[in-house]
Image (cartoon, rainbow, N blue to C red; front, side):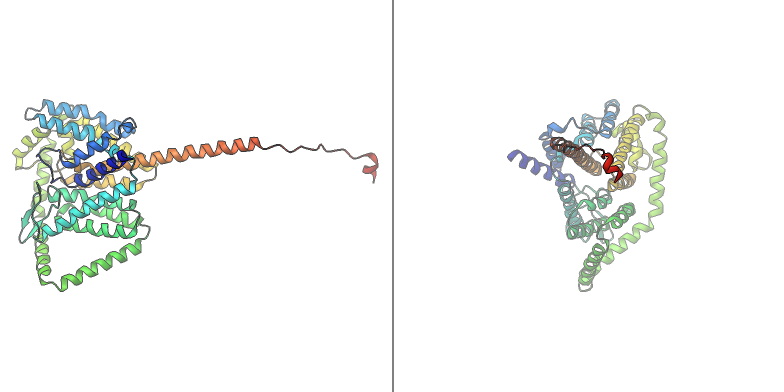
Length: 414
């Protein structure tokens, strides 16, 4: 019993601190959340052999990704260890840390930690709070692009974009309303242009919400209360005006931002023919692409090819394809939208050797394993019940069958 409680503590701490990557002792990918993730997974060693086909494909891409880091002339031992940990443990085995905990609890703790980070981001946007740990907050006019407990505003936006689909796994309606509000607050606080990628997940959640109109009504009530608070607070009015001015200024610079990113993408695509088997490596990609406009490629999908090679990238995304197939087969469509939202959110992000970039994929592994285990249990239970009914029917005594007697001639004539 004590072992089970200790495992749950490690798992909950992993969920919390993976969402808060600013609290890490080193610049490397290892954070406190990773420490608890490894400890929780180590206490579930009996599940390491229960990999699904998509986990096997994700694992098969690891050799080429690691070889790329080894052959990278600009690489380092830290890059090899980071790649081995992220692609060799977090993606194929990270879900094992949460086996044995109900899915709704895992999702609730995850969303609560993201909600706390969103509240911190709101305070940072208005200038009430400073950056924590290794987080970076950018100033725009008199407002700030907040990171919360993430490493950057873009990282926080990336994490929040796909979280709306997981609201459907929260049991209590009031909790869903609160978490929806916190996630939206966090998105606004980042002032990131990529918040537009959260629209599909938000619309999907609102469409499938069992109590859609009640949730919208309660959310409208909370928005009304906040609006009244702002009306009677000149300080908040000034802060909000600064935020609106900052957002407007960022929107005015959209053309240059798009030109810069697309130019870097075109430059990065020129190196793809050199990366069919072995890529440029994590540090080699950064060294090569920053010579163009000073930025690495802010498209995760191209970055995977450059960092791990085309073969590794194909195997990597083939694993995602099997994951989507399993989710569709089990009719867990929120997971399908979760993965697609994640793909959209990383379209403006480079490949990070941080486990928080892969939280949606870990959650897919957790939920698909729990659902498949429950389906297998239900099937075995149905088979057992069928056999029990057959055995009970076989034990019942058969009724004697009285043979029909033919009528006598006298009876037939009467």
